Length: 193
Image 1 (cartoon, rainbow, N blue to C red):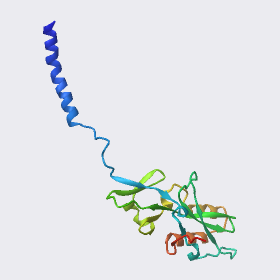
Image 2 (spheres, helix red, strand yellow; image 1 turned 45 degrees about the vertical axis):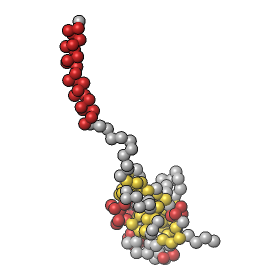
Image 3 (cartoon, helix red, strand yellow; image 1 turned 180 degrees about the horizontal axis):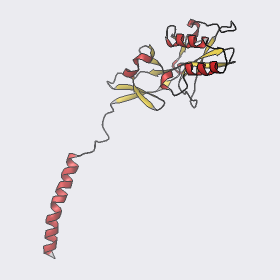
Image 4 (cartoon, rainbow, N blue to C red; image 1 turned 135 degrees about the horizontal axis):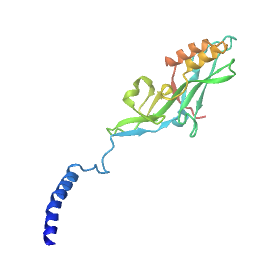
């Protein structure tokens, strides 16, 4: 019986040695690893104390010689576009408002040396990849046009559908193209009354 125990121990010893060596070389990283980036929380303009200066925007005249109107909708928690602000255009023919531009602001993280990222529709974006969408930046806040990052029907596609239905709204493409130049898109601090 002692003979079997000795043989078993001799055979088991290399297996234990290999197992321990494997554990040593393939250590799992510990939970104390420093993060490589920080996620910035998205906020609508109202939450940031800012507003889009719609008075600077050019008015367009529709086929009934009525001018377009603009306003900003601030989407709250639970809304489809929660934490975003939408530039809306009112128009006579549709008797409704249409979303032209979605913006979202982010309070910058303190300089920690970490990469800063944002999350739009459950997808992470490093700030460095979003330069073309940046509309405003100061020492504390950065604001991006997130229209193209949110899954929805594009404005030009929507206008095409209306035209196909016989609604005379070709002029709306001009409005959209103007807004997307960002030419007159400006932000200002909300004035306390």
